[in-house]
Amino acid sequence: MKKKPLVIVTRRLPDAVETRMRELFDTQLNIDDRPMSPAQLVEAVKIADVLVPTVTDRIDGAILAEAGEQLKVIASFSNGFDHIDVEKALARGITVTNTPGVLTEDTADMTMALILAVPRRLVEGARVLTPDHDWAGWSPTWMLGRRMAGKRLGIVGMGRIGQAVARRAKAFGLSIHYHNRHRLSTEIEEGLEATYWDSLDQMLARMDIISVNCPRTPGTFHLLSERRLKLLRPEAYVVNTSRGDVIDENALAKLLESGAIAGAGLDVFEHEPTVNPKLLRLAAKGKAVLLPHMGSATIEGRIAMGEKVLINIRAYFDGHKPPDRVLPSML
Image (tube, rainbow, N blue to C red; front, side):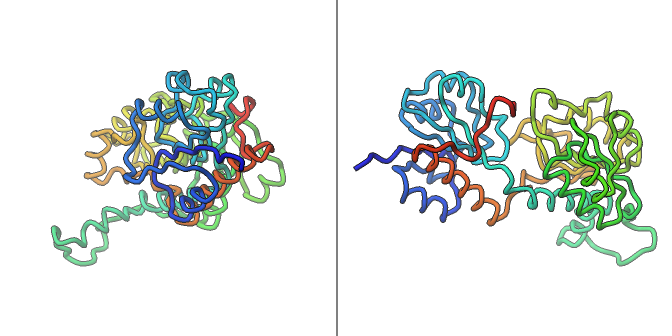
């Protein structure tokens, strides 16, 4: 009988995914769901045929240098792959896969939720109806936010998620604008009624809301730098459901504190799981809405991710090319 590959999973996955994984492979699960340390990851790559990390696991060159010859696949349970040194993995003959496409709608939903929550002050309002506060009742001038209809939304990164955000925002009456590495087809632009900006700087200076939906690459690190954030209008809001380090957090916090930017909605952070204390203080003051990386957190989405992981592993060991390989051209 053909030996089953040893698959080591770094975090808890949905029960249905773990059950199927145990049926198909010789599987080691992380029952406690505690993040694995670098030393534990090194021990894992020394013996595993397949490593299934998540976005919080840093699989860098130092860890890959310790990998045994038997490690053939890193099947990441994630849409992104910036947490893996893909070039080093490929150089060692290790196939890297991810789980693209299944989180688009979930992340776009959460992005739209933040686009609504920040200008309409939803979290501030919810805090009023708690035992620690007394609500004096409705007042014409109390808890005033900003209307959505007619506002200009600038989307940074118009891939699958950016386009899904645009579809939702259009239904709320927002004017759609975007900046992307490559301009979309005329057909897509017309369908979304979207205006393309070749200059990110010029777009930032003219928008009411900025939604960051670009992938994390070396070129997008601090894409929204202090210089670019200063281009935003004082009435503008920033929403980020992409990767935390696309925005210079310290600069964002400084501009929020001074009132140079009206507010921010963040689901991702530059040094996760650590959250910048400045942002926490601003959230307490109602100048930011912070969420703990919940953008893709749906049961359906997580199961779909797991199914992609299973398909990629099975395809490799059945002698086929995994459908979700990370290729050098994608880096």
